Amino acid sequence: MGGTQIGPVLALADGPSISPLRQNKAVSTAAVGPWRLIAGKFFRQKVAVTAGTIILILYLVGLFAEFLAPALPDTARPQYTYAPPQGLSFFATKPDGGSQFNFHVKGYTIAIDKVALRRTFVVDDKKIVPVGFFVKGPAYRLWGLIPMNRHLIGPINPNDPMYLLGADRLGRDVFSRLIYGTRVSMSIGLVGVAVSLILGVVLGSISGFYGGWVDTLIQRVIEVVSAMPTIPLWLGLAAAIPLTWSPVTVYFVITLIVSLLGWTSLAREVRGRFLALRSEDFVTAARLDGSSEARLIFRHILPSLTSHILAVVTLAVPTMIVAETSLSFLGIGLKPPVVSWGVLLQDAQNIRTVATAPWLLIWPALAVVIAVLSFNFFGDGLRDAADPYDN
Image 1 (cartoon, rainbow, N blue to C red):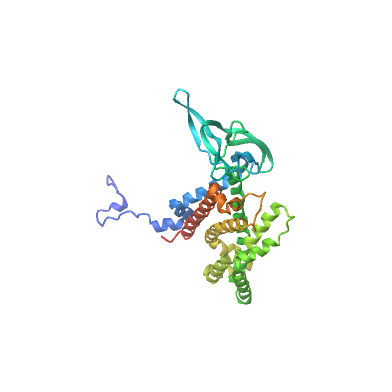
Image 2: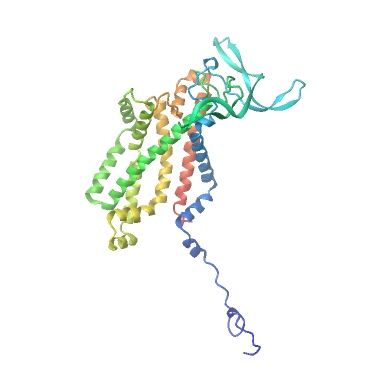
């Protein structure tokens, strides 16, 4: 050996140089788990991420509705019937003409409409209603359990009027009722989709896995349910609900009615996937290994459909929200004292009310549009990310 220096293997003088192996992107991508790939592809879609953020905010609003609402949803103040919306201001004008920080809303002045011969409210810039955060207000129970009287925002003096989105025909705060309605309208979508998910996945799995007369029977049931006229069926089922039932019972019955008509499309999609996967090699190998039929369905086939089912379910939630809103608007769904977006829209059923107080139509309808569009964009993002290997 002596003083001979042995160099790297890649730098041999008597042969061509060999470049080091580069990392194969395909190999590194395949080594990553499918859920991580789905998450990575989803978070690259800015519209879907924004929509998901809006959905999360809506559910947080519904979860903490009592704390976020300045007033109770059924608190009526007839002296402020159809009071217009008040804008929040951060600065007030001092007597010397300067300005100072003063978080407030403007008060009202009563004016007489000589043409319509009715009393109207006009926002008066000279009247100031101080507003604060975490103020004391009407007592409530958070989630029906924790007694509290603090509200995120509200007038310093609870007797002062504060209608950020206006008042309805009984002088109730539309902003507070909209927050409470978010809880009902957003949750009815989840409950309805949960029932539809169970029916659709179970019946679709059985239909696609066994085939034969079982598949034929389930498909005929799906066709019968899909052929039923939706609105007349809703009318008949809603009319059969006894008037003596409590609002909570009516809420769950309406949820059940909506969900019983919304599971057919998911069942068909799950059936088609099962028909395509039941003859795959991994299913055959699991069957030869002695796996039971239940294990084949729930351990081997269904997990491969999880991302697709999640995307389909996400797109089904806005359908449930629109169905509840439509039923309640027509007066055959939820009724007062339950507060939902559809119940709020009942106050905007005649043109005179809309002309007098357009905010009764604008804000609930805007909430429905935002929720439905957010779920659609979010579901589209999940559906695109459900196949992470498709570039």
